[in-house]
Image (spheres, rainbow, N blue to C red):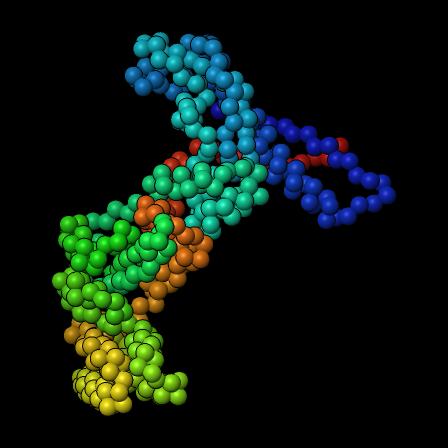
Length: 443
């Protein structure tokens, strides 16, 4: 069906002059607060009138009852209603109702044609905009921002309900999602302020396939231990290919319980240097004592791998890198003995435990010819964004709410195309609507 909507704009300008800024301001205000909503309302009523005439003429109607019958008769009107959209609240008058000629079930004609649920009070595109705003800001601020941008008032409690009800956070992964070639897995966790005096715990895993594809392996927000995370991976049959390396910090139990899933474990070098500072400080170390040890550790760990293809690297160069690694491990051992002799027992024990996983990235390159990160910066960026939302912009979280927020942020960070596809399918963006803005003429 095709319709032409003509609009008339009354322009009243002072003959004594006016500012260009006011003209732009008033025009934008008019369209954002009034024109867009009125045009939308007019189009919907034109569509309803066209459908109503088809029913009256007993012509073919492009809708069908749930029983499969497509024959309808007029059956009064539905009460008026308002639907919230990103163009503002759109008021619809009493809409035409029809009754199925076979089963007698009644329907609101326009809503049936638009595939809109009878009790829906908002559009999907507004829901998407609201959820994305609520994920980026607190619920109260998101509600204010949404009202300023759309003119639609949505209480912050309603936004919270939309977050809990949405299925946009769901991520379906096949067991072989990581592929057949050695991959890289990042894992980490953080705390948040739960309801009351409870401290909640968030854990997450992100994978990178050999082809460079990001894979959101999962989030756990119910206080699960790393043992339970490992059991969950087994229950979901998530398989990691041989040669997969885990890049993580020294969180208790993390490497031990995930050892059955990843062959290698690379201790995050950034965390190693940072945590060494705290370990020495706990033993009474001063800045003057700590900084030289940190600098020495950075030099020892700084083994650079060739950038060219592994097959093109001569064997002599590979032997040199292996010797450099063995020497670096000996130097770390010397640092451990130095710290122990100076009375920094906590720092010495920490560095001694870390030495085992400090150069796994070199061993992996020597074995498979595949390079991997030495730091968990990828998942750190995710947790930095997550921490901003659940720590700085919210508190008194319940596991259900923080779980939804966590999965949404993870999906948007790692699978933005899946996030976009989900909403496009829900909004049914299939090219069924074409709008053409014709040239305006002034009178």
